[in-house]
Length: 81
Image (tube, rainbow, N blue to C red):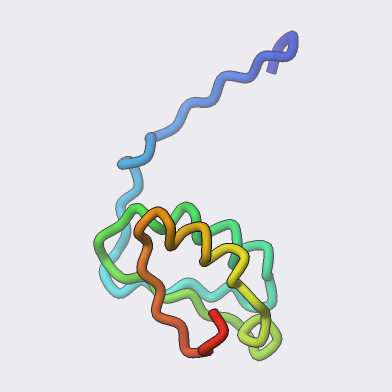
């Protein structure tokens, strides 16, 4: 970061490779659960996001609804997502 300018080097949108049948345990971190969904949408393999009982009760619809507009498919155990 220099003089209000930040240059970021990364792998780009197609740079991430995921294992098949990947399961990510966010434990009790709602922030991790919500932020990581945007990164995980660029894969053809299904990814399972799990958490503890508290996280499983939280509402993720405010993240899921916009991602569905981009064509992301979600399969939730709870009916309100």
